[in-house]
Length: 275
Image 1 (cartoon, rainbow, N blue to C red):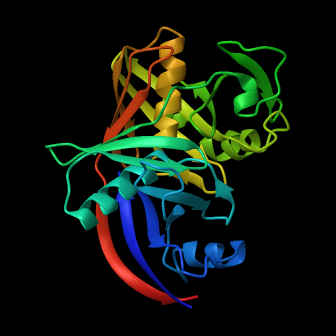
Image 2 (cartoon, one colour):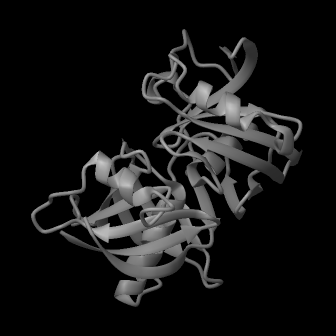
């Protein structure tokens, strides 16, 4: 099968985006892993598959596959890239309503060229991640590699654990990240964010993504970090999030309100590959 794709990126978080084949036969996990390899394949953090709308009033349904071939529920930077691509195809700058396993996402292309997506209301119920806990709390103690950490846990349509660190430069991302991702208290694994609070409108963040490893940026990770930081009283309603690949903006008024993620989303190139 000849696969036609568009390579896209949002602050260094990179993707291939393609329309689902007419026969609905998608690459298997091994093929996605091969395609994701940055030396022998195309190279990407996630593959985004576009399908016809499943709900009235929506523009597209999309599925997300990690570099390890696993399917996940949501991807903030991926959603922004999809919004850019669908908008370009329609030569429209209006709003979009998109659907995924993680739920509905509203998107808009701003006048300054940045793309904003409504990532929904952060869900702190441990069962929503899922995360094994007796009750909902602001912070949870957890032991990893013989050390005790306190984490915030939140679902942004996918599971996130957030650790506050004094500096992201020295954060133990390579060791604690994979160990915590696969901790038994996260039955479906989790994305692990290491957050440095600069002030109430600015954080630095590194994210070890479930099924990928550390990436240059993670949109839902930025949302999860701000949601946890705001719940702890550390952050205001608008926060600049600096990631290794660039800057995102997260806006959240608070409980019960939707959270908006804004940043660049760019087409890199189009290509075809035999799979």
